[in-house]
Image 1 (cartoon, rainbow, N blue to C red):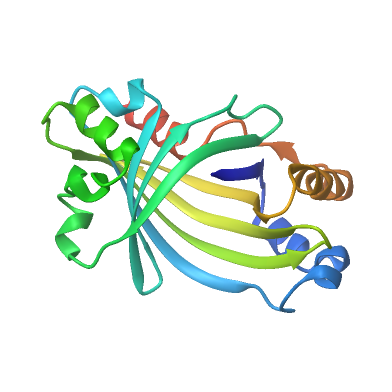
Image 2: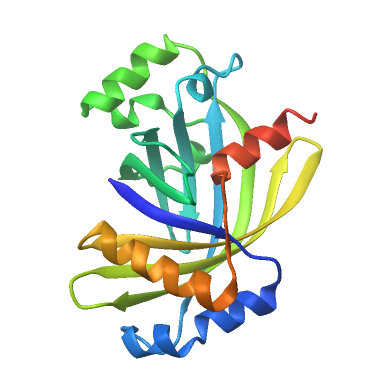
Amino acid sequence: MEIELKYSIDTPELSDEILRYSWILEHAESPLPEEVRMKAAYFDTDDRVLTRNNIAFRIRTEGSKTLATLKWKDDDEGISGLYVRSEINVPVSDPACFFHPDPEIFKESDEGANLLEVIEGKTLVNVFDMIFTRRRIRIDVGRSILEISCDEGVIVAGSKSEPMRELEIELYVGGREDLLAAGNILVEKYGLKPELRTKLARGVALLLKQ
């Protein structure tokens, strides 16, 4: 289960300021954020059956490792920037997965079996990519552990591209109330606006502009 808040960020300077905020540093496990270069490829069938069923199929490199991820909507997405989704992550070592992923990667799970039923043997094709740098810092607020990440990069769909910059606060351990409290602290301090679209939704919207 993935539970996170998303906020739009206007400038890289704001990202810097947030990651240096004294409240975050007081609770941080490390005084400096970890920086990871990421590239993500999102896949669907030609008739967009996964998008129509609120399913995301992604292959992403995170530094030196590569993960295949299957996500599906569990709750009302994007209300006040809160997203609740189920997900499965599987490490992959074959570089070809980044270009021609095998949907049977997830076949051992019930959700993977459902994926195979949904796509009905259709080929998965790359629909858009994201290339970005994530700076993240984990904080311990007593009952909960949260990860605060600032992402900055670009979404690429065919001949179209657009910049992407956002703040995520993800709940790793603990209660949703601590996640919401942390979001409220940063909203009060910086006047943040909820990001009402996932990265997937923004990539799909850019694809439709072709």
